[in-house]
Image (cartoon, rainbow over all chains, first blue to last red; front, top):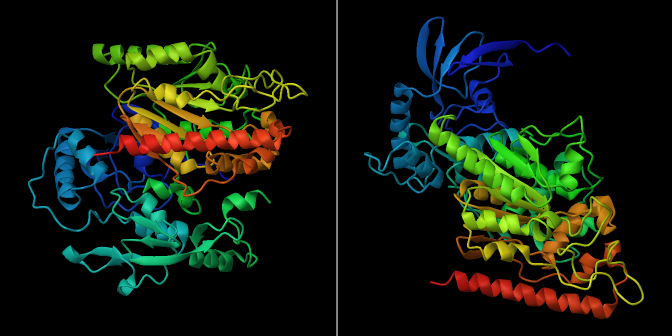
Length: 244
Length: 315
């Protein structure tokens, strides 16, 4: 394996080292600098949607505000994580986010920490979605189901299944887990699982031994097809299967 | 959403943070669920975390003399005072931050001990620390005996279990006393957060640790850690045994947040306890009458817990 090229630079005056080309945010977090962020996750590609991870980067004598989640580190850059400018910009972003997602505990907490009691902007009724795109990226890059995407443009931009028909959704719940504002909800009633936001209801497979429903049938068949498992692979629930 | 967390295990598990703070290469037995639980706990508490560890399995396996598995500050203390040392660390950090020796920041303080170090030897120090209201997380890894010294009984060993100091024979059928209800003792201190968890339900466990770290004041987490060596269980059944312990109602998963009880895994019907007991060699000698007795007790305790949930959530 070829040696990784390491670069040295400074964050808030502290000398740090990282592999060339990695993004700035994970490096800073690794060294213990606190940078708030909502739309970044290490399992998927960076996207730069929430704008909260703003930092000041000085390169060749020029300073600019930039999002750290999609800024590749370079030799000799000088990063500031907490200045007047950054705080001002972040407060504005938080106020805007708060207007979009007034019920989100996480955003409320971030806003409170930044000293914002209430937002100046009129509240929007968009179900707390901040269009960070995490669910869409996870569905495409991690799950591989590619069931949802961004739809429409401008102020009508939204996330959802194409033509409002969630035909490819396997109701795995990865989007429910990743959503930073908890706006994607999952419900299980009897032997049916529903992902509320995508309006997808799937029947669950019942365990052949204990009779309890444990996962959507559609999802299990999808996995069986994808990795060529024997047809009866998912007859038993995880608890009964391990006991065999 | 946390109600369904353990159902999301297929894809959501790939979204768990990959950075490890308890490194591989430790000396834990095959199939040890305790070290798995510890790894998840360390992962959640992250980099800004100081751990005080009592003597026990996890101390032995993670720090054989010239080596260490720890990627965070970790201090090994005597059997009885993990909670006392953790409260000292917390008080020290507070003083340092007040006097400007350290910039203001959130540093998690965690104390960890086994069931012996918690419910027998360290109970007094733990009670003191909870009463003084230090902001720390106490994690008890309950493998139901002193496994590290060779499977001696503790007050956390369940009724009927055979250990080297409560051997099953013709006259005495293993442990003769019931398991001490340690989470209830912690809850009786009226601390802000008490929870039981099990590494067989990893998302639930991580969610609870996160909650415990975020809450101001003492938090207590009791983790049932299946020990294949001491429970006389094939290592590949460790996770299965943990799930059965929960699904039979022997170890219900619940949390007590500011006095309010909540069941994390609410089961419409419990599996018979026999399913859990029969896979373990330490319960092999149990007669049907004794199993009945255990079943009775488990149902009673579960009912009691359900009543508490109802009672504390009224109005």
